[in-house]
Length: 402
Image (cartoon, rainbow, N blue to C red; front, side, top):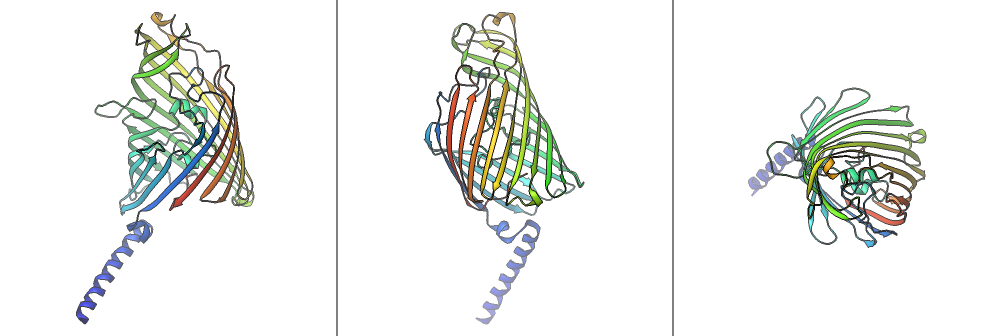
């Protein structure tokens, strides 16, 4: 019996020694062997004057995420993450649809030991372009995404593929990255083919100014191809709602910046954050007008752009106020002769929206928010909007990125 106890103790000691060694390489014993599990519960009440399905003027060929009216559960977000071994870490985020069903938001593997500032990510992930794109919905400072994200990226660009980042060994923050993927996220078309259908390049630099100020600026570029991208209920010159198809190349460039200030470096008491992004997209290819009847195909190209500028101020602990201005430019399209009398080339209207929010966070795990907006993104359809939102975080949840 004493021999059995001694043997068991030896095995237990060996297991503990192995776990301790593994934990030293991966962060902690809990992280090494027990995946961190989190659940984000969120919901809104929305009051809008116009049909949320109506797209921004001049952007009818783009998807419209829109808003939900009345009481809405929203998507619950379930996250699982853990170190796999000393070489890899895994992350999965599942979106639970209130109407039923589960979708995969993120599911990727990251390297942890490449060294030299290199990090490789593969699987499904939010692209590293811009500033807001990598942030999950519960980390947004407003109820919704800026208009430019809604119309150009369908709120967020997600990709199936590879991402490589390099963090320079300098005092100043310098990050370079590139991605290649399937092209499943808008504006791409998810087609079955070998190789990659989309690519992203981005660069970010940033630094501290004393202990009270810090900043980051970035540039990004995205390219993909759209194949038979269908747009339903697009208005034509005669005022009819028709269905069109577009096939061609899509190229987007972007600029982003963020600046933060906290008195004496104490963000717990108060801080100010100012950020903005600008995107410009050029699409060139063939447009098929009115697929149900006329079915006329000819050349089409257009350059569209948009930006937002927002600021958030935490004036006392737990309380924040924020304001955001959105602006879009639908551009003037170049249309082939066959469709010159069918397709609107110049809408002569630039959509905009102004939003103000106030939120209260009893702790780092809960937030209550109220938001009002004056939406003038649809010509002749001014929309005064009101939202109330809750965001609750259960379980282990890692810190958000800068």
